[in-house]
Length: 89
Image (tube, rainbow, N blue to C red; front, top):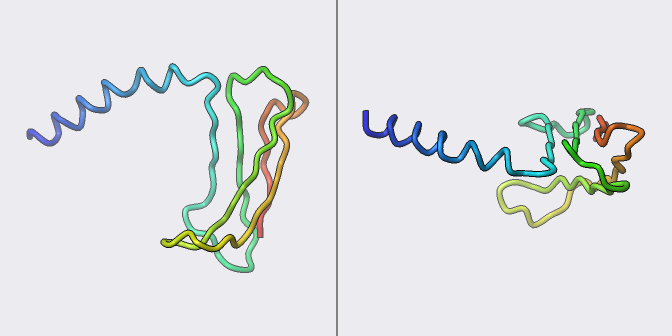
C-alpha cells in the first residue's frame, strides 16, 4: 500500500512539470527495431514557433551504445506543422 501511495504522489507532483515544457519535443518509435525491415519514426515539436528545426535521429546498439548503426536528419518546418513521419531501415 505504501508503494502505491508513494507512486501516486510522485506522479501527481511531477505532472505540473510537463506543462512547463515549452516547447515539448516528442519522438515515437517502435520498441523493437528489426534489421532489414522498414520502421516509421514520428518526430514533433509541440508549441514551437521558431524557425526551422533540424533533428538528427541516431540508432545505436544496445546496451553499450558504443556503435552508431543509423543516422538520419530531418527538418521540422512551419509548413509541416513542426512534425514529420519518416521511414528508417
